[in-house]
Image (tube, rainbow, N blue to C red; front, side):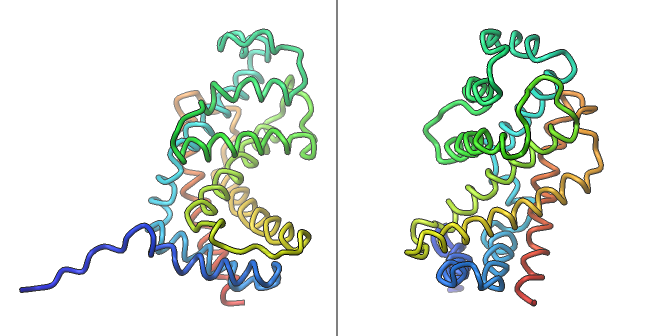
Length: 239
């Protein structure tokens, strides 16, 4: 009888990206070829291509869309009105970090799944980045600022998804805290470049999107970002 080879299971399809990422980590961030191989292999082989990688972003796609819709609503109708539609009017006039923290349950409700956890963690990380990105006032957000907030969110979400899949807990980060920070910062900067290129390539003024059009835009950006990350990864691996 003909033997049928089983499809590789979840555990072994991440083996190559995991070992490449381990090499990158143990180099303290200097082995960019291994970073490139890890990211490219993750998208092309482990996830099964950019479209499937984007599908793996489940809750983070919904959360990204909810975030963009809220920011567009706040920019068009004022933050008080946008908050009132969510029964969060009490947050009007509060610092932006408090407004965002109050939005967390609406944009990424706490759930039991890893997927929901990733979406929420990415949102919390985004709040922590707002001040450094120069975004201090939720009233009068410019299209560029809305784009920045969305890029921050998508970057954190993709980073968390990749790290969860390739199991950074199984990857030993360098014992030297500065080297470990360098490794994490390089991965984030790499992903951020891919996300930013994807958003810019879409050529859309985010503020002009209708609420219905936001979902398609967010899905397209995730897929395009993974395509770009695979290409960037191949470039680093060949450098």
